Amino acid sequence: MSDKTILVVGTYDTKDDELNYIADVIRAQGGGVATMDISVLGDPSAPCDYSKHDVAEAGGSSIQAAIDSGDENTAMQIMAQGSASLALKLYREGVFDGLIVLGGTMGTDAALDLCQALPIGVPKYVVSTVSFSPLIPPERLPADVQMILWAGGLYGLNSICKASLSQAAGAVLGAARAVEKPDFQKPLIGMTSFGKTVLRYMVSLKPALEERGFEVAVFHATGMGGRAFESLAGEGAFAAVLDFAPQELGNHIMGSTISAGPDRMTNAGASATPQMVSIGCYDLVDFIGWQDVPSKLAGQEVHAHNRLLSSVMMTPDQRREMARAMCTQLAGAKGPVNLILPLEGGNEWDRPGGPLHDADGLAAFIEEIRAHCPDNVTLIELDSHINDADFSDRVLAEFDAWVAAGVITA
Image (cartoon, rainbow, N blue to C red; front, side, top):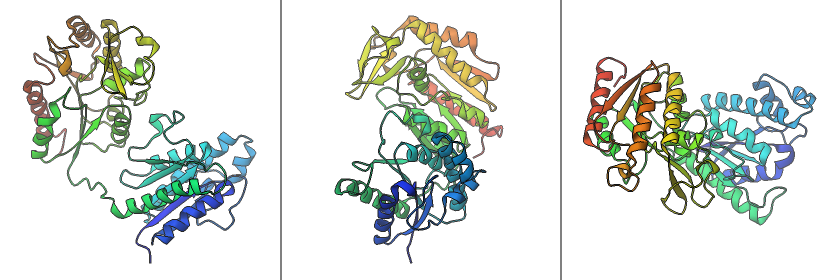
């Protein structure tokens, strides 16, 4: 008897050989397999455990409706919705322990919805001809999905694609065996930040919050980190969020491709999760270092962080735009929001004498925050810098007050 079962999903009418190869590799390694067909027109060489009819019906539709739509995009969205609903039901019933989906653009489109439906900690592997490409927007990626490029695999098996498929099969089975799923025995705090070179509050806040009985997850706010943070916040996974590095919002409004999506800084509010927010690196726009500067930022000062990542320093007017955007995103929050505003700056480089110090720009940002801070947000101004001990001390004082008032439960 196998120890773990993997759900193998794909369009069996066009990828039958490849999907069966993945299943064979998993079985050869001692794993179990359940199969799900998300085809529309054709049929697999042998019946799947969950047919295309099962999938369409799970989405509240039918294969005939998908065919009658006459549109491949509409048809695949029916299968995407159905596979997501069915997979979540099967997982809750204990049918499988990990998931692998194979596809080109059609299969990958459905795979992302399917993976998004499953909880964090469930091994999710997508083997795709378009892995890591700009076709996949960050907001479509689940917090813990794994992607593998399906090299040389557009049509039929060969030695090149077998190398990718066999690794993927072994990876998902190994992950299902090794995964330590979140147990959430302690309430979880979600925090955003960057490395200690530029932001340092997490160094003192993480152990202090852990001493209070909380678990702390710190997310690197560079597009995908913020996407994972927002995904979990939207699920209500956090007891509270300390969203102190909102730079991804600035990236988005300034046209950078390093974006966590247009819903950055909204999902905690939508789930009524208590929020503390601040201004870490609000004044910088990150962009991909090996690409051209976004046109909106052309001619501005550039700081090369490394060969992958560069930052542009915002002008005072752009900082005003950032301030208004932050206030807009927070205005719809259903839970309590504290905006902690350190009046002496938001990253280590912007201190007086630092390479990115701009007193006029900081003053413009602060003025705009004061003018547009929404009524549902408590604005707390500090005569300190975000990296000073005063900032972390005030965060803990506000946090403790929320705990004492029952806003956050330890």
